[in-house]
Length: 439
Image (cartoon, rainbow, N blue to C red; front, side, top):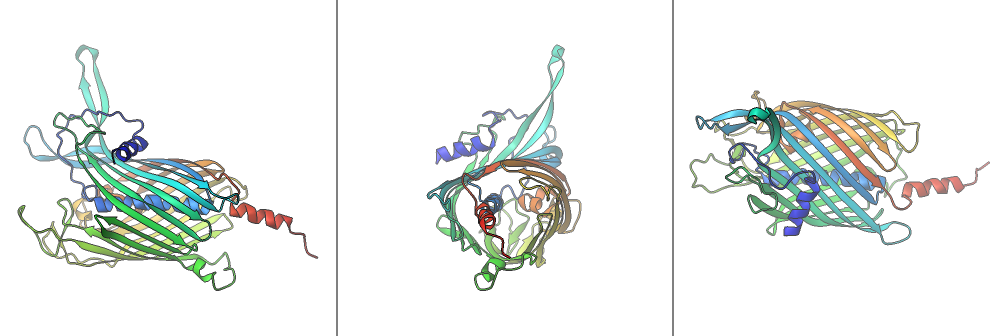
């Protein structure tokens, strides 16, 4: 699997060098989500499927996208060189992610395709350091510090438009730790690597199934039903002003008594000799989407949760009273170029609230729920686009890394995407244009 590791790092750190000097100790920082490979796998899979939904909707054969996210004043606790005690250190979290998809048509109609997908996510902390160069004066340098985390998907795809989509591949979780002298070798053996197989399918545009395996054990199962597409198999075409309804169910082994998690499973533990326990998270979701004349776009989602075992808070040692509502979100988007075919300029405002058991650990509040907001401006053209986004406590971001609670984040994204043949929408327009007007 060495070539996969190297390709993964090259895709996400093309601008990075192979050895980076660090002036801090090599101890890992306290970030529960990053040290939970199951949670990190959930993140990179969600990015993969979110991007694939756009590919499917737009009927692209080629898609390349990249995104960088900054979170400032990201405080961690680091051992002090003077006292040895843990003290807060203000740093900047940088997350880069991107992916490449190519689908090769197997017939002239561009309806049967084989493809390759890769999606990756890189987490790293940086800090600005002042260097005294004597008579040459002072200078500053910004380096990565502490462990870095890489999560990547490599998958093959089979597409028969309108009938079936199949994906299968490997998910690689890798953490890279600094060596004793503070350097970091991206292609060396320092750190840890784990592998998971994942598979997904879409049948007749209404049924999505997804699952992942680790060491022959099913780690996650997910099913999503597009109710409108299912109903159209039995009814006449549904009015476009009827919102698209989707229903989802998921089971994932998220709680595994990890050292950095905010909860134990079933009972509190002490010392190093104990039997680790695990628990599954079950979620059910309902979503609504509406696109009004390609001008106004509305969406809303609610997600409910249940955990298979009792969770004990490490902070208090007491049983956690889990909220049944995990997530609630709503978005309103306006297309400023709705009357101009071929390009779009979309302003989006979103609200969400999100529940997580680790919020009191990583914030000044004792609450387990946070309200979030974001604004984004996105430009779409026939062969690509770009987006800028600013947010605070957005549920999607807190799901990726709960330690970003109560911090502002900024995103920049770009993509190059196109279809090598005529899409089904273009074919329908041609058919409509050829029809003779009726009396």
